[in-house]
Amino acid sequence: MATQPAAKIGESWQDIDTPALVVDLDHLEHNLATMADYARQQGVRLRPHSKSHKCPAIAHQQIALGAVGVCCQKVSEAEVMVAHGILDILVSNQIIGRAKLNRLAALAKQAEIAVCVDNIDNIDEINDAAERFNVSIKVLVEVNVGSARCGVLPGQETLILAKAIAECEHLHFAGLQAYHGGAQHLRSFEARRRTILQAANLVEETVSLLAEHGFHCDIIGGGGTGTYIFEATSGIYNELQVGSYVFMDQDYSLNLNAQGEPIDEFKQSLSIKSAVLSKPQSHRCVLDAGLKAFSTDSGLPGIARYEHTKVLGAADEHTNIEFSKHTQVPEIGDAVTLLPSHCDPTVNLHDWLIGIRKGQVQTIWPVAARGALL
Ligand code: PLP
Ligand code: MN
Image 1 (cartoon, rainbow, N blue to C red):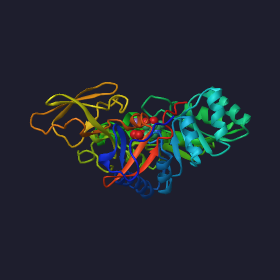
Image 2 (cartoon, helix red, strand yellow):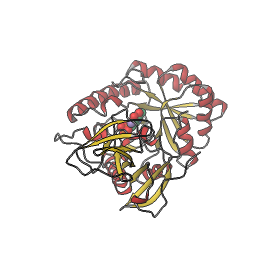
Image 3 (cartoon, rainbow, N blue to C red):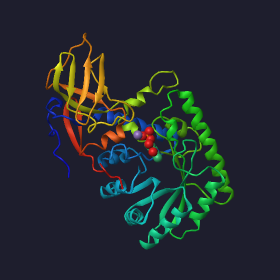
Image 4 (cartoon, rainbow, N blue to C red):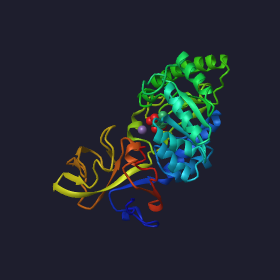
């Protein structure tokens, strides 16, 4: 059950109650347009990952700008997107077990659904579910191109699964997913370029092997916010499944471009508005937002506007900040803006996303797929 949002449309940023998840709409729209334009120029399809925003409203904007559909990581996330009219979905993950596969097959009655596999028994399971619901499901083989999460090896292992998919009456072999998660946050441009070049070579060899056996890959997908340039220009990948570019993790600002400077084509659009709850010492403040308002798997959040601050630590509902003797220290009730180090899990902690433009609340979107873990 969603809580009440922390603001009303038309109110000013100052009026937003805290803690609240806030998106700068000018920055968001800049990011959406920049990626859409880039994909179009490079002649690759864009299928952004909805796990980052979990908001059908943003997915619709991405599609209006030319995206062919979205990726979801979970069946329940896909259910939310389909319920809100997003009708072309790649579940960029493995889905196992009868309960979830029934839900996946049910979705295929309403929308184009594709799913990834890396296991032969799972292929049979998906086919059985598709048969029960009398639907056809597109299936991609997930290939491990170096990041060693899910995925079979390129080459023969991939071919074996493609053959198994093709033998299933209710499945359609739709191509490959070759996402390299481990490359996204490599700091040097050259390291990311080299890593994706190696991945693209493995994919190219695999696509040729499949072609020799009569298999065509409609989708050759991959690419995240850290590496999309290299997949897009590889001549091999034809779909980008970028997610974080909509908001930009603080952590992504540590990635360097070809000139050795922080990447800057996307703007950080997401923040958490918090307030000073307590000021136990003249230079130490405690904020009203903690681990339940932001994720810390990529580090503690940054602090906007105030310089020379140090985040001492975060607890469930509190963040402790030390201010330098040379800065102005906020008073109890003053707002402090936090910049999430990792947006995907941060968004999943909030019921509402408050959109501001020129200091005014313009949209309030439910994070409709929040908690969609099944
Ligand atoms: N595709 C898959 C399978 C992912 O796991 C992720 C992110 O973890 C993405 C795409 C999007 O990557 P990013 O959020 O870095 O753009
Ligand atoms: Mn992420």
